Length: 218
Ligand SMILES: [Zn+2]
Image (cartoon, rainbow, N blue to C red):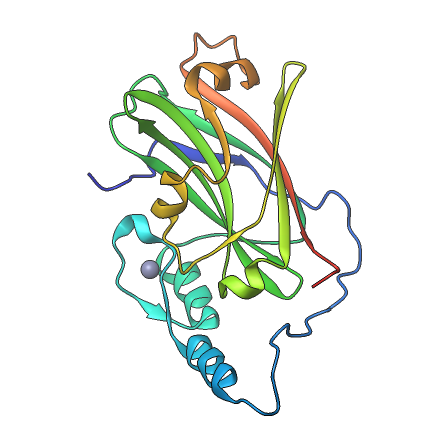
């Protein structure tokens, strides 16, 4: 069954929490040995290899470089792009007790002159309803590893934080989800964070904030 997004929405806009001028520290970490061009050639061919569309739940077959995919995601999948390295979302899951198939959302983040995919998904792990949130980097694995991110879900005096390294979109979002490389909540624990408990649990409202940063040692 293909994931569907009908039941899920972002209720509030992502916004910049700590606005600072983005220093465009974009130096490449590619190591080139002057006496051996083999590695250089391999890296060049890797860079030219097109990426699959990260809106993978739709089984979209579009491929291309990241700039082309950004245009495609906005125009064809109507994915929203948000500027800034810090954000706060409120996800609303309507009818969370009737999750029959994976339900997910994708938002694009633009910071450090690069783009990231923020996924939030409701799914079943075996028979347990779960939520997962994670960020993927729109570029290759080597550069992805120079970034880190946090995601934090909070509400009702409770807080849970995940710190991770974004995976490249060379990995499908399903691969990342199935490896559980992100902030994970069971539906039961998610209810403790839901900011609207007076609604007989008809809706689940989760406030998730996060931040992306670049590791200065890279
Ligand atoms: Zn697509």
